[in-house]
Amino acid sequence: MKFFNIFFILVFILFAAFQYNDPDPYLWIPIYLYPALLCYWELKQKSINKKAYIGGFLIFGAYAIYKLFDTNGIIDWIKFHNASSIAATMKAEVPWVEESREFFGLSIILAVMAFNYYKSKKVA
Image 1 (tube, rainbow, N blue to C red):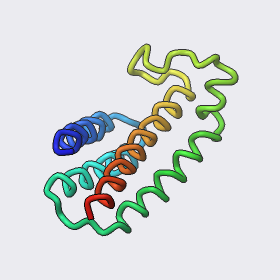
Image 2 (image 1 turned 180 degrees about the vertical axis):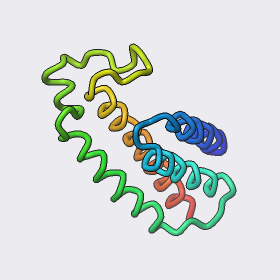
Image 3 (image 1 turned 90 degrees about the vertical axis):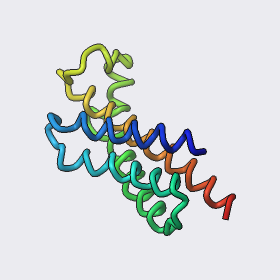
Image 4 (image 1 turned 60 degrees about the horizontal axis):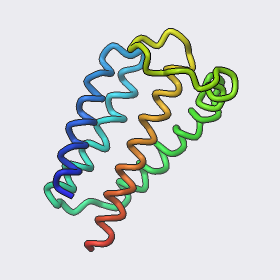
């Protein structure tokens, strides 16, 4: 559990740092720093208000669903672009690359938060 949270604190801070040249860094830097903070609190075994997790699930989950069905989103990428590589280059030259990457980023956040939420409930 300790290694898991240290790893994801570093990953989310790194993800946030990569957002400085994104078209909307004011949105994505806080999105990545929020789960990093939750992982930090879990690491320090601070008492985390479960509403922090629930709020994160609701906001990030709703945004992930939006990204899933958005024009040029993940479904369009799979249906119309045959799931072509979204990692070939760092530059998002076509819109579905950026949308798909954002969806997968939100999916990682939701998975890490769900794991910590489940583990913290089991411990308590």
